[in-house]
Image 1 (cartoon, helix red, strand yellow):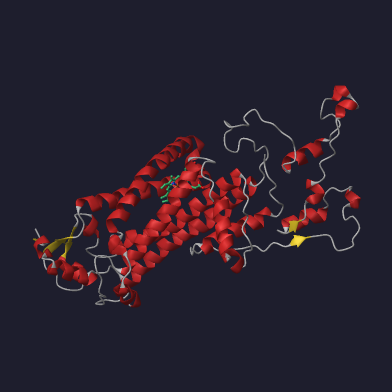
Image 2 (cartoon, rainbow, N blue to C red):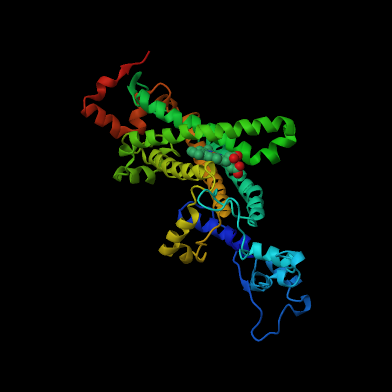
Length: 420
Ligand code: HEM
């Protein structure tokens, strides 16, 4: 049976999502402060003129995002009258008003037994009314789609500007004509498994989110329907390849991505990305690559878990549990968001999983766009590392000087092969 989803839910759910993101140090913050409207002390019954029903002021207060104390509705569910003693023909609910019955259902006070109850009941099958859905829908097609779209377009614009100002980052020194093996075949396989599946997941995910508003007006419903269906099938199945790739790259590269003191020097000069002939020392992975690596791991795990929650509806509720832990740290309260809701209906869990999944996807895609740019048109010689696996020695000297020295001291020069 559904639980009470209090009035003013818009404000509270928005705060919930924002607090979660701030707490995770992923910037996505915007909060609406809710205030509770209570009748003034000593006031007469405030709803006398409506016979106890809600007033225009209640409705307007909710529209302003204020919480309206709702016991006048949740407690107004009629008495436990056994109608049969008065008029047997009317049946058990004959003298209860429709409004009372719906309020009982809405506030989880009706004694309803469903045929699906019991051990075999499907999760959430006993939820008869769920009224948080409209807020979720509005958020999904409103702020989520709008700001997510801006984030991706803004990232593309910034990268274009960077290319315009800085130009392609060239190999500054004289090329040696010698090649060095940077990534083995298995490493490149892990990289392309993750990257390829990520691109497919990104495109099919965006079709799911923007299709109705962006594609149907362009290609029509007849063409969109099979596209959406195919996209969903691809998304649901390619997800497993992405998760496998994630495990592979973590296992292969975690050791070399542990931060060290050289990273500070690298960061201090912006990795030399903004000026010519600046080449801070770096081992196999520089600080910029380490940031990308850890972002991929953290966001990849988060998107996988929330994706699995979507794939197996109602089986993996995790937000209420996470909120309990976050509330215990005091972080949401300290950030001024108040305690996050620790009781969520199964549907709210799903709604949060969907929003979280899509928000993480947008942040993830923006980061990966920058990574794709630097690994292709942005930097001369970089693509070879994942293409053929062999890089120009001078490129390696400029971007991974300490790694080259390590290779040499290990007798690694034998890996160098003359260029064709
Ligand atoms: C890795 C495991 C993943 C799983 C299990 C997964 C699962 C899902 C599922 C079940 C949906 C709902 C699809 C639907 O019913 O239409 C979805 C939506 C979506 N996914 Fe994923 N996904 C994963 C990874 C990703 C990645 C890596 C991205 C981004 C690159 C992504 C972006 C999206 C987007 C944008 C949506 C659309 C949300 C919406 O329609 O509101 N997903 N995902």
